[in-house]
Image 1 (cartoon, one colour):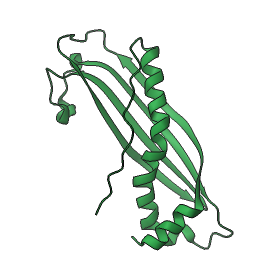
Image 2 (spheres, one colour; image 1 turned 90 degrees about the horizontal axis):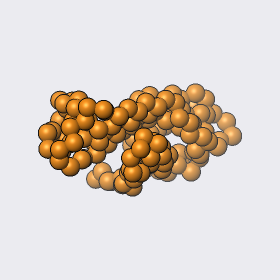
Image 3 (cartoon, rainbow, N blue to C red; image 1 turned 90 degrees about the vertical axis):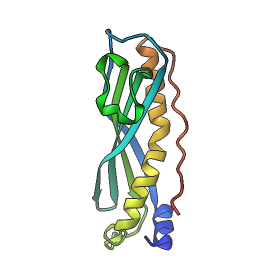
Length: 157
């Protein structure tokens, strides 16, 4: 990736809107109440579409409240369903636009820089919205508000 090109992309791009694409949440009535809870939080970029000077990206979030006495958090695919207190899954759509006078194949020439932008900036931009959704939904489910930690981007050297 070319740092000069990346900086130019950052200067020219703006976040136009964030929309909730889908939301699914569920409580487990058969939850085994022994032990403490841990929160498993995952996010993943699903898809990015570039069209002209517009960039649209879908990012998914999955939050589980699980009994930590019965599972290994790192291996959440093998969770016993009765060890999950609740699950919240949602997808956000982030739409960006480039503030350029003409397209000039700008986005084609910036493929690596756009990939880096999506990997680094989309989660950072979506995080406050995800935090609000999780906090709001957990209270509506009858639990204390779950406050997600702040998003911290660890630079790659």
